[in-house]
Length: 298
Ligand SMILES: [Mn+2]
Image 1 (cartoon, rainbow, N blue to C red):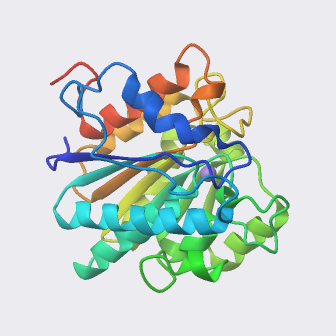
Image 2 (image 1 turned 180 degrees about the horizontal axis):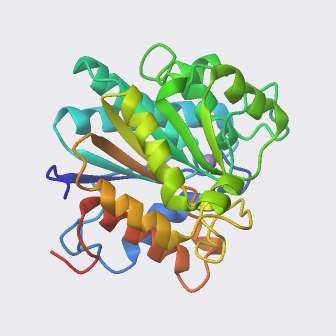
């Protein structure tokens, strides 16, 4: 199991998404039964970052960039103290902060950062290709050094990720522009169709081996919408026919023994769309799985 202390970091922001409801994800998780696998009863997040301005006071981009800088500092500090950060979004624009911060800390230690990106979408738009302009559709492009100058330079110069160190898994909804970007850069994408054909475990193993072969340490970012909406309906952009929650939880549990896994991020949990706390339960299971413990262990 993970031997480092787990540090739970919440980011209560929906500024990157058209539906801001996932800002309430961290609080919904905190207010549910205590996460005894990670935290003593009633201890909440180590850090819960919230937007400092009211809607309308600044631009979405200003808010997202300011939060990304604070999150990057928090994650970087956590890693430099040998902790294992678990970031709970918030919309997936939080990935800009999480992995820019991880990159900054790891570069100081002469480590190279890889990333497994589990998502129904590619999150690889730049402003020119995005039909909606929503920033939660852009974090992977930003981390690869493509897009808005403010966002790509959070916590240091771009790029934070090299294309060969990244795999995207579970994709089934995207626009041509972002597909072209990932193809041009050479990022490996495992579509849902391939997962259905070969099985999740086989595809996961290949993606993991690819990321491990090209980096010294790696992170895992999970957009909850990668999962099948029957298992995880509490998201802003549901897409049918996704990954079975039980499959992903099993693979995350297997990673708990890997010292090269440096951080976990779970984004886009929107409690307002949840049904019977299904999504809440999956998020809790994923957090406990990465610690190698059960929900009820102490
Ligand atoms: Mn996403």
